[in-house]
Image 1 (cartoon, rainbow, N blue to C red):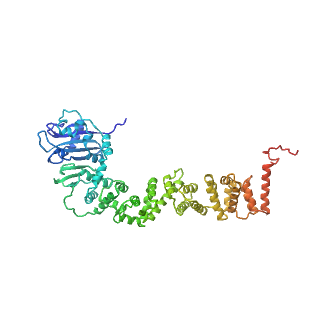
Image 2: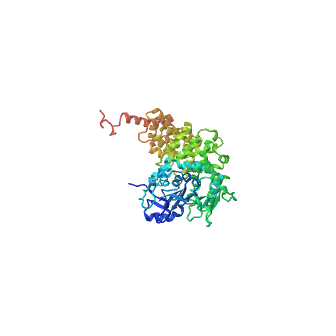
Image 3: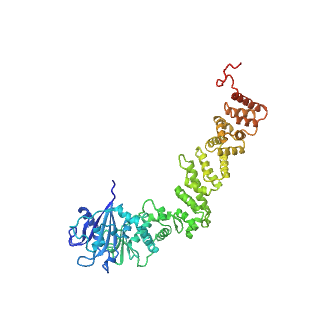
Amino acid sequence: MIRSARADLTVYRWSERSLIGRGDVGPVTTSLEREALLRWNSRIEHLVWAAQDDTGDLSDTAPGFVYLRYGHEAALLRKVPARDPHGRSGSTLTHVLTGPADSMDLHLALAACRSDWDDWLPPRARQDALLDERGPRGPEDELLPRVPLDRVRALLLQREHLLDDLDTAALALPEELLTRLAEALMEHPGAPLTVVGSPLPGEVVVHALAELLSQVVVGDWTFATHEESDAARELPQFVFVRPDATAGLQGTRRRIDVTAPDGTDGPLRGHAALLVRLHRRRGRHALARLRPPLPLTSAEQVQHWVEQHSVAPGLLSDLTSLLEAAPHGDLSPTEAAYLHSRAALPRVRLELSRLTDGHLAALLHAWSPFKPELAPYPQVREEIRLAAVQRCFDAAAAVAARPARELEDVLRAAPPDAGQVRGVLGERLELAVRRAEVFDVVPLLSCAARIGLSRAGLDDLTEVLVGRFSTTELIREIDRISRAEPERARALLERCAERGTARGRRDAYDVLRRTEFLAEAVDRMAPQNPARAVQLYGLLLRWTIGPRLGPRAVTAVLEAAGSRPSPALLWALLDGCRRGRAHRAVVAVVVDQYFRLQLPHPADRRGPYPHDARD
């Protein structure tokens, strides 16, 4: 049985003698073993003091939160002002949750900042009980139970949708302020930052920054939402203080004073503004498509990354977001102008080639019906349909590959232009010729039929095949196609006959001999239909030999047809040579065939009569 991750809980408050033996604000109850308690206390004891001064009713004071990471471990602190047993202010009540960092991640920490911890804390450790003096008070108390993190995650991230609440709250963050903060992170990735006088709670600002840049620049994304000063040692990456807070003397933290006038724009201010606008307009999914393989570590890397994704002056975006927004009329003037320009087409093709079949099918569906919003972008519409047809053909031609059913279904609802499909088939043929590959057209013709191409369009594809394949290859294709789609094979034969006498027919006779002049293929194309079979053989003769059948040609055909030619072939030969030696040669075979069928020769051991039949 796999046990879920659990976190340890420690409560800090004023005590005459805490668990570490001092009379001060210290741990009074915990689920940690003593060695682990001492280790964690050395890390956080300078951070467990009150987040703000005692002003008014302490029960109405918002708590402060601290999120820290130490390698594979993490800690989350909630601090609320409290009074000591003598009623003096300036004390604090702090809950400290410690556990594995992969379970106590940034999302959990931010959601916890917006939740009521009493919903999941053990009863003896809840804030209400402790502030009412009913909670544990000293080292004599028994150990607290550990906290099941899967239950906490479900409560914070699934049931209450607290991250969605943070998304909504982040919309109130002024764009100019978010740009200033983003610029600071882009200029010095991972560097500590103090925000002075933030108009919104610290967790809201950190959430907005993380949504924007956590996958772009390095950083541990730790935070303290409400501190009296940023002068303490080993503070998190982000610290939020009041305007009257004491500044640290070390000077290692960059400070952005929201209440002070903004300074001169840095070289990355414009890039930061583009990034903020993209996130505000397109959301986190658009940024996820742009993120680098690894978080960036320098301003130079950030500069290069932004320039790489700047599709036009003043436009930072990925093409997929624009293509998804266009059918809804949700493009800014800059975005619309870019998508309308011919310069966008190469990027559109590249972006479409990277999409999954399902994503491309959804995009094709959105662009298929005529909408006034899409009227300015006819070239983009054609590129999407072309990409879908190419994807369908590639899937159909691949060995042991599944057809692209999603794309085929969308195309069938609004069939593509026959010329576009013909062009795709022509490209595939040329590629096969250059690579000297065997090209199987059967699955491609089947695919063309499945995506709704009209009969006339399918005939056009047949014309492409006739023009590109040699006579030998065409005969092989007719034989092969007849096994799966007899009607399509018949259409190909008719088109070949219309083209006239085949070039290289001597080479073609090798194939005709092996197939006994396409006997089985004709049977498949004209099952139990002698008249149709005669017609097909006539087409085959006119294509491979010509309208006039001389003695040599008839001899060659009969040789290729084997010892027992098809009666339909013999009839077609008689129709093609009504007199002369050629005609007499065919009649001789017909007579021989008749006697073989009706009156077997006595020398034929397979006959039903005895050898001595002279009586």
